[in-house]
Length: 198
Image (tube, rainbow, N blue to C red; front, top):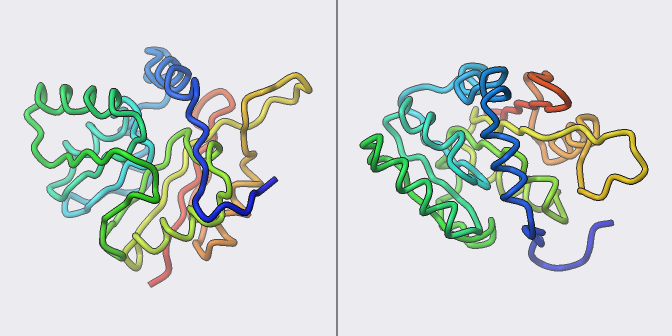
């Protein structure tokens, strides 16, 4: 149930450990590589990218290899950003800009981002509608939002918060973005790609 806080609350306890083990699983990476998503968006080499809830840099690093623009890695966890910095140095990538904090701390100018990637993070944010509106404001006209989430399991004992594909699709459309692609790449993982109208 959405609260009335002025700022979205991010429930990060235990979040990153699960995210790391899920995304970094070699079998899952083989079935759904970061490059697969980047091709579906599609990403242009002139694009600027925001990895919203960047985690270990699963999408940050591949995106930075494909674009000449800045790739902003936003995460509340400093240890995740340090991991990304280490990976970036190893790959000799200089276009990654780490930002610690939630979406409330974003200092990125409005209408300056071509692509926002939000992987396994939006289900943690309440209220979601406010955050999606802020993401829309950051996107340039014609820019894309790519959302990667887990479909809720049909089990009454499930404790982790999840948002169904249908529920996320409605939230994104309510924010004024147009869904252009949706697919299940592996297991119960779904991807929604939305576009900001020009």
